[in-house]
Image (cartoon, rainbow, N blue to C red; front, top):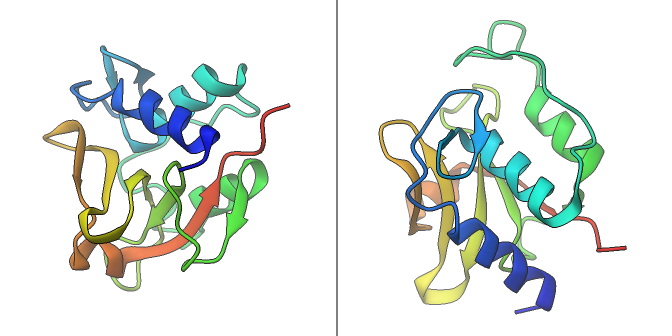
Amino acid sequence: MSAQGERIVAAARGWIGTPYRHQAACRGAGCDCLGLVRGLWRELRGAEPERPPAYTMDWSEPARQEALWQAAARHLVGKPLNAEAPGDVILFRMREGSVAKHLGVLAATGARASFIHAYSGHGVVECALSAPWRRRIVARFAFPDER
């Protein structure tokens, strides 16, 4: 695992147990999946490059707009789907035909692959990157190199 990957995974594990709170991004107090990535950005990179507008649970769906994917592509580094490494930000499409709107951070690869994400009803957890989760991955990103 790269040094940057180690830092990202360690920081993400520090968020485990944070309650799920829609639109929040505060370790220990509450966050959603985007809030987890935003919080990690602040911890690892400093000020956020962009603040998301207020959004609903079904954001982007009525307009069929890949807003989360587009925002990730503006600030993170796109990677091939098969080039996984701990610390990657992974984007999921939760239902076939819907927009991609769930994020997680890859914590481990291989036979014991896992990812960390904020999940409604569960808070921030680390769980197995099982086949059903893998099938939902539509994009993979890395945090930009540290400067």
